[in-house]
Length: 478
Image (cartoon, rainbow, N blue to C red; front, side, top):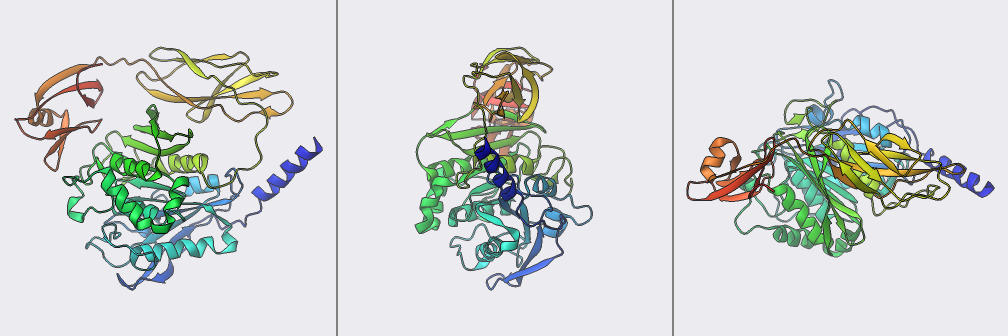
């Protein structure tokens, strides 16, 4: 008991040893000179007053990259009210430092990041100044950054640059979050369509070649992508292509998980490796156009969307929970329940059961990461749910002596649908005209699922099944 108390005390001290920051965005900073694009890298950083809440009690660092026709000043930070991309709140929750730089020069004549550079360098150009920026903060002891918890995320050209950085510097970035980002090897003229013959393998090969001798670091990197179903600026097909490329880069076999709903119209599909570790995520956001999904609290202007999912909240949770580099803190006491299973569903409820844990006085039930109930038995029915919606569940054990355990392995469950599926067979052109599909670069894609249907003309015919409101899949009703 004494040893456990000492361990808890030491952990508490380490978790609160980081220097508190001002809890506000900095004024505009000037960092390294960009001899390729001109000028010096400028931007802002957020240093929270809160302490780190990551498992090892150390600070994380997130590099956030704006898109074309945006700036860190007016869009990522937005000094008018601090909303912007909406990183402040989640930074406070996790005690993470956020970096928001402005793209140097005027690349592609729209203040873009140079994601389409065919020969990026770790020491020059946009990649060079961004890596220098990260190293400045990681190397400065006052920020107490854990080098194993450095992440990058961005929109559009910033999303493309996010993938470039994850490829060229896997030794620095433990996780990447790509928002509508074209992959390596594509040009600025190809943002709206996937070039003929370009595949995930094309992107993976380019990525690995840039990593060079650091390619071994891919074994502990995680990645993800998000895109809107109404994004007609950057091809929606790039999202799943980006993550498929990373899975090829990471190597081994992967299992596609059950899609789970995210508040705000998002659907996340996780992929786990052969060790059961979640390595990539794919999020589609129903009805969102080309924009950064900031969620409530962001600014709904200039390619920033405040009406759908909160991607910063999802990303920080995803990165922190699935980080493969940062050592964990003390093991949580108790025994996580096993055998969690779905025993029944209705349109508004999901019933669960699990194996009993010796000496347990009760169990807590978590839905999508939030506790929704408790039970003294090994079963629970969660009421008041939405029809045709997927949820993620986990259960903890309450031990009278040691308290609440860690959570069980999560499972996904879907309520029964109130929607009656219908199928329509027509030409791709007719599907697009009727609003069942959309055109991107002359190719028809099913709305919702974004499945490719072939050329958008009257000579190609497909059957589309509407399995939910605004959601179509190629084929007949299940």
